Amino acid sequence: MKANLKSPTILNRGSLLTYQDNGRECCFGYLFEFPEHGIYEPTFGKLDITSEEAQTHNRLLSQAEIEGLDNHCAVGMGGTFYTKKVNDHAVVITWLGTEVSRDVRLRGDVLTFQRKGMNFRGRLRKDEDCFGFKRIE
Image 1 (cartoon, rainbow, N blue to C red):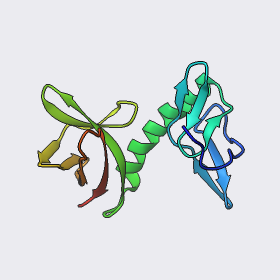
Image 2 (image 1 turned 180 degrees about the horizontal axis):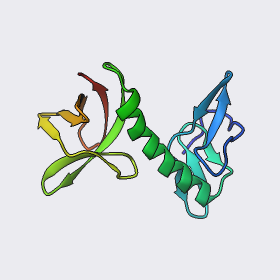
Image 3 (image 1 turned 90 degrees about the vertical axis):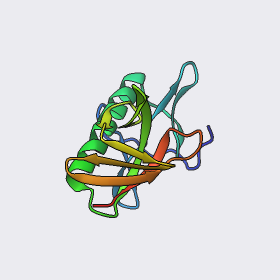
Image 4 (image 1 turned 180 degrees about the vertical axis):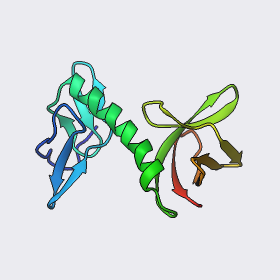
């Protein structure tokens, strides 16, 4: 994994890890731990944090993604989730595997899912579990 930017100062240790970017507080993405090599973030590369801090951050980020979807996702907004098969049926999940929706329809490579009365649509790519989506109504 190659870092794209210099690692910023980590804020909120022991919680959802954030950093300052042009006066705004931003959240790090999901963190990947490689035993004997350290913990990495996709944008910044290796971060100087503990395994426990990474696990807490990832758990809280997964929860925040779902809370954001439920409480703040307007039509036209979206994000990235993942799919898995359960009993030959697609389920939408977060990166950690937390279930987002079982109300999933596939038509070709177009995936539509529903959650709390809202409808979302995304497009699957060959050999990828993640997909970008937008709220459609």
